Length: 203
Image (cartoon, rainbow, N blue to C red):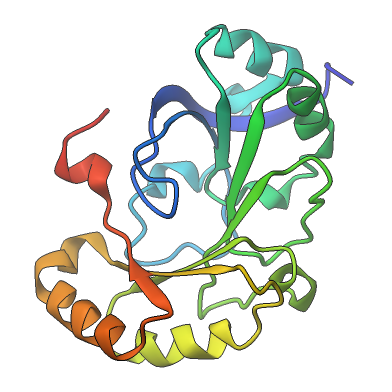
């Protein structure tokens, strides 16, 4: 099983910069490949998969090699294009807390995952089955129509304790933040998220 390989664009130990868990120390595993490719994506380098990107599970685990790591964040690209269960199973056995960030457009094996952040995209909606698995619904606000999209997506939330987050598209942060603040004051089930790692220049 440890010989199974995945396209990994980068791995690094840093702070979670956005969402409900912003500010915590976490080890990031960024998968290559994306089926949606949003115009405003800030990780476009992850879209294209190259032969040299592939790492075995053993290599991925050996690269962690940091006893201080408690939380692993699996992100992309779109990580659920791949069957993550062989990797998450081994990471879980090693005692890590596992978070996955996904658009929800592919099946999610939640068995060994502690936290699922669903960030739906208009181009390709999540699979209905994934709404009941998400812990956090994060909507990127690029223009005012995204508020309607956010409410539409919130209707599908199947967990009573699901956290609802609105996050400004980075390049429009200054322009869109006042609108998000006003919206949340009128719709207090939502909370705002900023890309703190960019603001603080956290590598």
